[in-house]
Image (cartoon, rainbow over all chains, first blue to last red; front, side, top):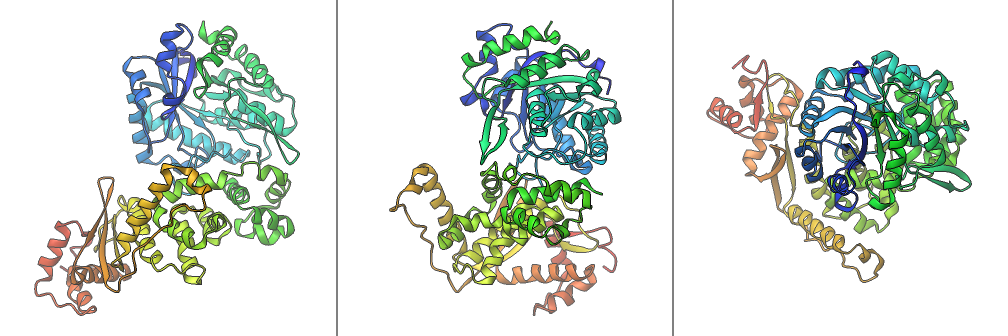
Length: 282
Length: 285
C-alpha cells in the first residue's frame, strides 16, 4: 500500500481495553490539555473488542488507529477469513486510519482467548517473506494499510538484525512500517549494538509510525535486560532513536507515546518533547 | 529450514526450565522432536539461560488464559494435589510440548494433562473425571461449531455427548462457587483457615448430557438415556465410515435400539440440530 497516501495523524496516545478506567482517558486529557494529542491508538483483540473509551473517542470523530493484539503476523494462515472480517469491521467502527501490530507471535497454537503472549519473529529471510505475505493478505481483505511493528524481547533468534528483517518485509510488501523506538533500543542493547546500528541501511522512507515508551533497566541473576514496562520516562537510547528517525523519515505520519497507564501529569512534558521533535505534528 | 520449528523450540524453552536444561545436556535428544537444522539448534543453545528465566510469570499468564475454561477441573485437581507445582508442571508435560509442536489448542492440552494425571493415579478425586469431561466438551464445542461436516449423516458441529456421574454438574458448580469466594479476597491464599473446596459425593447414577454451542454460548442439556444412546450410536457409526440413511437402522441395532421409522427419526434429529447431513448424505436414502 502506498505510504504517501496515508493521512497525517500527528501525535497519539495508546489505549488498551479498559485502560482508561485506571489510566489516562484520552478525551479527558485532550480537553484538559488542548493541542497535546491528536489521535488514539487503540489496542485489543477480537475477544474484547472496543471499550467505552474507544467508542466515545470514535463518536467524537477524532482520528484513530487500531493495534491488534491477536494476530501472528509471522504465520501466513493466522489471518483467517473470520479474523479478517471481524478486524476490518472493528477498525471501521473505530474509524481507524490503518491497522498495526507487533510482527511476531501473540499466541502459540491456534488463536484462543486472552493469550497475548508476545514473542518476536525468528529473524530470517523466510520469516520476513512470510510476514510480508500475511500483511498483504490483511491489507487486501480489510482495505486498510497494515503496519508491522518490531516487537520487544530479551531473546531474539535468527541471523538478521531486526532492522534488516523489517526492511525485507517492507521491500516485499511495498508498504509501510511502524518502528517502536523503545523496542528497537531493547534489541540493540540485547545484541550489544550501539543504539543507531543498522539504521544506515534501513528504508526510513517506509516509516509511517513511531512509538515511544518508557522502559526500565533490570537485572536477573546478573543478566541485564530492559523491561518494556511503559513507565513514563523513555530511556535515553529510546529518545536518541526517536529523534534520529523522526528527523529523517519523510513519510512519518504518526507518533504514539505509549503511556496510557500513567498519571497524566507524568507524561505531559514528554508529549511536548515528542511534538517538538516531530515534523509529523507540524 | 523452518523458522516455525525454531520458534516452537523457543516457546518450549521459555516455558519449561527442565527442557532448557535438557537441551544443554543432550541437545540432539532434546531438540529431535523439533527437526531443527544444526545452525538453528546452535542459535538456541547459545541463548543465555538466564534470559530464558527472566519472566517468571510467563507460565502463570498462559495458565490464567487457558484455565478459565477448565477452572472447575483445575480447582479440583489442585485441591487434591495441594501443590501449585502440579499446575506449573503442565509446561513440562508431553501434553504441552505436543500442543506446541502440533499447533493444538493449549486448553485441550491442559485437559489432556489432567486426564493423564487421573489415568496414572497421580490424581484420584472422584469428582474430577466428570467435571473434566463436561469442561473439556464445552471447550471443544466452542472450537468446533464452524467445522464443515463430513459427507453423510453425523453429529452436528458444535455438539459433544458426555456421560458422567450425576453429581458432576453440582461438583462443577461447587468448584466455581469456591473460586468465586476466593476471588473476593485473594489474601485468603495467605490464611491457614481458608475455606476448603467441598464437593458433593459422587453418585452411582449417570447423567447423559448434550453439550452444544449455540450463538456464542454453550448449553448443557440432560437427555434421556435411550436418546443419548441413539445419538452416540449414530455418531460412532459416522466416525467409522460415511453414514447414510439406509445404514441408520443397523447403527441403532448395534446398541440394542429398534426404531420403526428411521427416516422420521433422522429428520427430527436433523431438524433439531443434533445431526447434520453432509454433501452426500442423501445417497442411499
